[in-house]
Image 1 (tube, rainbow, N blue to C red):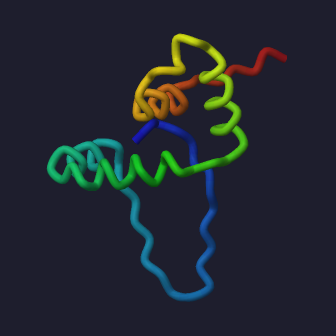
Image 2: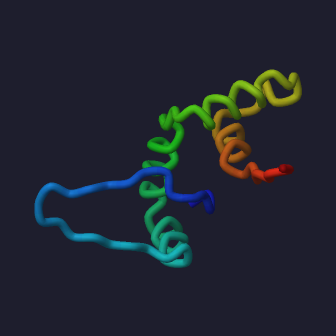
Image 3: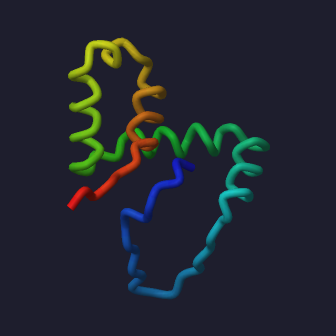
Length: 86
């Protein structure tokens, strides 16, 4: 959805089915069923890992960003590119 990297590992203690969606398939599903997109965005917005919290705090320290709607803040957080300058 946001072209991010995997941030969790799931290990099953019992039998399970595993599925994977391509980015194109996800886009098609979200365009046909908008509630899927809204549900996923709501779940993502409640994600509170350290990097997400840091980016939110950093963005909201800039006056320009303080009055933006939450969905725009969320888009910005997950659109950040990281570089290692070492």
